[in-house]
Image (tube, rainbow, N blue to C red; front, side, top):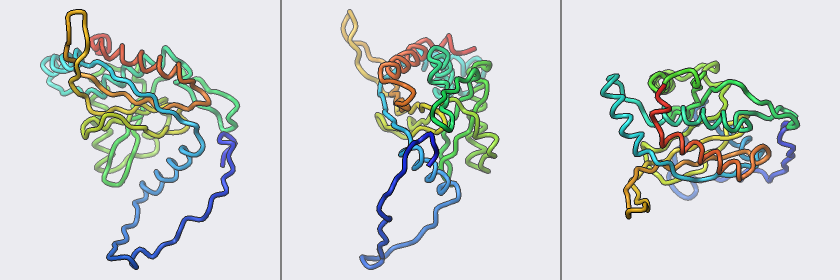
Length: 250
């Protein structure tokens, strides 16, 4: 393994089993993308001490903002585009999240650019397309690019040039369901943000109970670089930005 992991594993061999001895089976080869992804995820899982922090973001106003943008522009702006803009605000406020450890594991490289990866579920396997210079683009532009990279990933795949250079990755399962999960870090990034399904939840106010649309956020971070308190602060910062969507539009 690389010097960054500092690990030397001596694991037992994987068991070889004749499953057909127990009943009917079908052997289905993994796709090339699935094989590559399996290798990278296995490396990242064993090489990075990763912890996941969970919190909710109030996106009630964001939903109204999306409706207004659709009326003004004629385009559907996904919540993920707003999350990308909010993530940029978080990366600005917490530079250690916008960083990577070098191969030796001894030097932290702080990035001055804001490229965000978008995990795309394709028939051939998981791909991560990178949206570049998100700090310089409007939420509508980012939504258009997310739609474009997702379509290309599912229909034709993506060239390597479109999948490198990211600062942090967003993985969204909100269109499927779930309340929380623990995404695996996309090395050499030091964190990844997972999104689950938004739900209406009651929130206590001075005047009683108010129902708010809450988006579950799951931040997995590299504990060698980021401590738990800063991870919690980062998620609170991102959630605060999402609660004020008008500031994210441009």
